Each structure stands twice: as structure tokens, then as C-alpha cells.
Length: 312
Image (cartoon, rainbow, N blue to C red):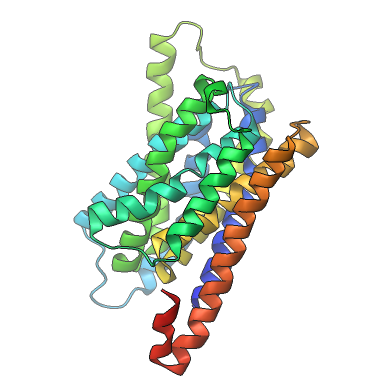
């Protein structure tokens, strides 16, 4: 797969996640965040399982499907659950627009963490593009982060988990060459942890009781969309596409979810943005388009020879 194609798939995943925020927000009217996460990703695991089984069946000799790899995939699922649970909890008290853009703070964290943990300094052009994305987030908040509520802070903490997730997805996907198996184990781990967390949540907090069957049924359209489309399809696209691009570039491209979340919030939830907010959206979108153009140019230069080094 070409890098430019992989990058377009990551933008598509970002768009699906952005629209998925509406389903995540609406579901909170009927069921709690942990049960929603649990049901959503158990459904996603079932949806991707046939691809996983086919991948394992058709894998060549020497396929690295071992207990160690499955353990790594499960560990990835734990990081995934942390990010998703914090994000979903935050959505109870903050807007779809804020959730989308605050989540994208992982864009600036990925290059730093990649450098610190993996000793992989990113291309020089990634730094200004990452800063451009963060500047967009700042403008979206109208330059007043002091107005953030508890839900916003949950989402902000979750951004660290998402940064780690982006890094390890790229690492594990490239080395294992088992994207569907990785996605299935990740989803199953997250789903189980979500259901277990719901048990503790309801026992520790008296007001967080188990929802009724009617409540779950009312939330089923959101669970299905979030599980099959936003979960199984989008996160599997990430697992496949990140094998062909860097974690830093992937982070910027997937930040497009914030742009789509803002548009959807304005259309369906009447979440209006200020002039600075729309300017912030524009900056983030500009960083995404610029990244894609640079990667397409890089592919063309690489075909011509060493001149490709001039873009980094």
C-alpha cells in the first residue's frame, strides 16, 4: 500500500470517529459510559473476528502468533480502554465539539513520546504541523482553557492514552503483520474491561445502577454504529494503514476527527462556534492537508532517488 493511500484511509477513519461522537453523546441519555464502551467493543470484536480467523488461516509458515504477541495485543487493548473510558466519561458533561478537539491534543504528544520511548525522532516538518494543530485547539476554546469543566479534563487525560495507543498500534502492526488479529484482541479486551468496570461502577456509586432492558434497547442504534462503523471499521482501518506511515503523521491525519465532530455538533446539536473556533478548525484542517501533500510529494521524490531527503 502506498503511503498516500494509507494516509487517506487514516483521514477516513478520523471522519468516521468524528461522526461517531454524536452516537457516543446520545447514548449517555440511556446507559452509562462503561457499559456503552463494553457493549460497543464486544460487538466490534465479533464483527472483526471473521477477518482475524481468515488472517490466521492464510498466514504463511513462521506466522508470529504466539502467547507473547497476544499478550502485547491485550496490553494494547488496556491502553485503548483507558482512552475510550476517559473520553466516554467526559462526554457526559462536555460537548461533542470540545471532546473532538481536546482529544486531538495527542497530536503533539505523539512526537515527544516516540522520541522519548522509541528513540525515533520524527521528520522535522512534523513539528510545525503538530504545533499548527494544537494552535487550532487553542483557538477553538477561544483562548480560555480555564473554562474547561470536569468532562474536558477527563478527555484531556485520555489524550495521553490515545498518544500511547497511536505509537503502539504502529509498532505492533508493523512488526506482527497481523492487523486483524490485533484489532480483534484489542476490541475484546476493551469490551471485557468495560463490562467489568460497569460492575464496579454500579457497586461503588449508588446512582450508577444497571440500565434496564428498555434503556439498552433505546441505546442500541448508537451501540451498533459505534461498534460496527466507528469501532470495527475505523479502528481496523487504523491498524491496517499505520503499517505504511509513521506514528507522528498518523496522529495529525487522524486529528481530522475533531473537524468532523465540530461540524456534526453544529448541525445536529446546535453547538455553535465563535470566529476563533472556526479559525481553529481551519488550522487543523490545513495541517492535515499539508501533511498529505508532503507525503505524496515524498513518494514521488523517492521514486526519483536520494532527492527525497530534502523534504524531511
